[in-house]
Image 1 (spheres, one colour):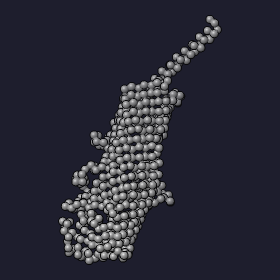
Image 2 (cartoon, helix red, strand yellow):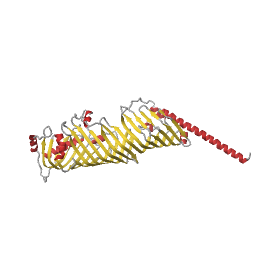
Image 3 (tube, helix red, strand yellow):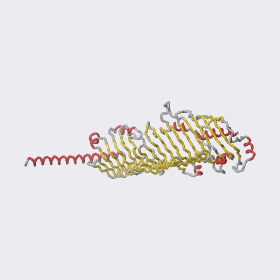
Image 4 (spheres, one colour):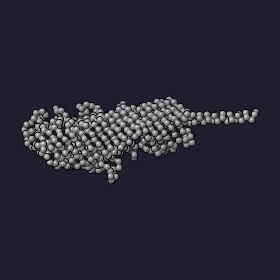
Length: 506
């Protein structure tokens, strides 16, 4: 045999040997990874149709996996694993994956009691390796959470697209409430539904999180029953809400879990085109539970909240109150309401320079009267100190009769020219001053039927109501009021206004 032919033979033999070795290693690695995937799927009680592994392309695929833990189920069309880092797996048993595609996952979570997992801590301690997935792409599917009745959704949302980055599982992350680290880069959800309580449900058409900006479209709180039907579901007074918001936008939105508590922060929150209808039937007994002021509500939230600035634009609020079964409801309306709110936060309340919450509101009251309100309170203050001041412009008495006549059996005539108020208070009491300018103001106390005038009572009522000429300047009247803690802040504020008005009219 010639020397050149011999060398060629040796080279071909080596190449063939290497090829056989590579094929053998490929088959070995494929079988190892396939076996590892199958064993781990069995550990989490998962079933599947097929597991495919291709080492040459560094890909794997699980067809129709189904997970069932008793209280949670997950059904997926396919899970595709791309860019498997073989060397890390062979040398360190670490699983590093470039990309994970999950198609049409259907997640169902049931409210069921389950036995304590006595092996849970031990299993967490045994996890000595790490799992890192650089990108997780979820397309389609749904998330469904059920209440006590497993046929009724507590929450439902359709998933359009979710992109997670750097999903990591280590022995340390397994000790956390969410047992893996991750970052949400993109999240798009459709048809969101949440069962709030026995009387209301919440819905949103779309939720999108992109580049740390969260946008929610067509957000709604929907009453489950008519006004009369609502009354059948409650034992004490409870408001019926009907709320719709065209869009909610949170700029530079961030959220995290800190010490088992959810933390939400945003630089700017914009809420546009709000329609809020509130109905209260006073025929039910009072709810005597203590009603905390807003500062205390925020202070005691289970969520850590940090909203630097909130803008509320083009809002309409209608409050209806039914006091007498044979009369129409009393109505109070605020239209063209715009508000700027700063520092809604319960983060860092121990710091000396903790910022006060400030709310500036402009609106039309009862369609015609200009209304401005400046409201300030300190969430960190345990006494719930606040200041609220403002002014109201020209208001015809006919406008306030929409509330006074059905709710208080009073009919007013004349006009209020201007009203100014400034009150300081806390959780217990408030005081301040108020000025009302009015002209030709008279009241008619109606009969019980709410229609005919009670002439005798009206005569004596008008004896004590003074009429001011247009150019006569009204004086500020001192006002004070002790709060009933079973009533809301708005009842508290209304009583201050009522006492100030009575002093001005007498």
